[in-house]
Length: 458
Image (tube, rainbow, N blue to C red):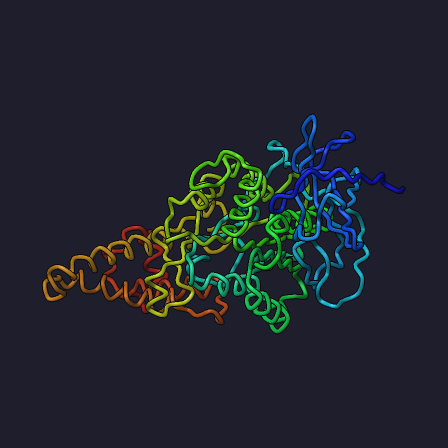
């Protein structure tokens, strides 16, 4: 059906086009704007009032003037979904950029998604193995969880994301496992690195990759995670797959929100971010979960870089309220060359207890996790003490705990970005490290379990 065209543009301000209202339109409707030279740019209705319709354009607004023609398409932004998207690389708007065959969708879905009825939600409890000891043992990820990674500028969070995408799997289940990766505001170099990683390691076969580059317009960055999550929901709840969604960098996404908000001249909230950023983030994060009666699941690992490594910044602060814990990438560990540099002390998985223990991982998992945390925390305190009084002032017990701390970082934390550890291997390594301290110090572990598991009966 041919849509009516209007030449009623009043002004263009950044990514926003203000159109004189000539007919009723709905929030979120697709808009096409054709420039005099025939170029068609797409956008969506961001706001509609009595006299004006505000259109958010996904591309550069250069070339759009009062002589451009506007068409309201009377439909929301949709993502064409199909199982054949696995193995494909798409741009931030869902168009293929890998020179592959044309995508023939099974259906088209509204990218806003539908909220999961709280009554129908199932409790996340099945262990997802990432192959990374500090996550699998100390901050366990479970199916249906949303567990963000807090990082900082210059830290290797992208390498961590690639490692998880390559290694992650649901242990002991026959369900197909898929990864949906959404890169937002990444550089051209980062984009090529991700493409090469997925292709060279074979991870692309089970993945759908969305790449929004830093050179792409900010409004496109706002729809990229919604495109990715819509694809994940289709694979999970229509095809019965367990889907892990990795989104990086949520800070770039929030900065795009701020840019559009500033163009609309909205009253800013904390540090210039829009007041509705909490609600907007919640709409994304709450699309993770399991639905009663459905085989599949959607699990989220959003990655965000904290400006100045500040966890009180609005982006990590609001993310922490919505999600179920955090994994913290530490700058000091990175400076020591320990990779992946995850600090277990400020990290937390609130759903860890649901997915570990007998029937999920191993019966000693919970006790070992608690004991590692307790000893490492004491070792960090002893380091502070040594900086004041010197190591010669330590008792024999304290020296052994300090030695445990060094070996824990060297062997447990510093596994490298290329090593894929089974949960059994990670737990066995934990016991090897725990044997470095006197058994009397292992107060978080059941005595019978200590006798059974300590190497050489120590």
